[in-house]
Length: 83
Image (cartoon, rainbow, N blue to C red; front, side, top):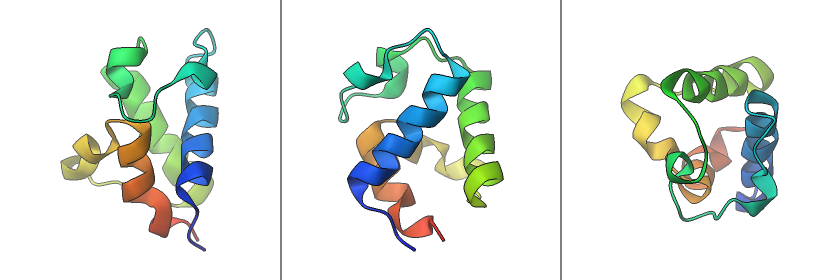
């Protein structure tokens, strides 16, 4: 079942908070790239992608990684992929 933009953003915030627990994800601005707001390295980003696959069976091809740049772009890309 598709999720709303807000629901997807909350899911991404939750995943990020588990991957980098020292970051305050409640302060994330939806339109700004996550890497500009957080201390995320490439492994952290891959962990986010892996959690989406593990928890929600969502496959994100490597070519689409740039579409997960911000909370807004994550929501746009992922909203209709939830089952």
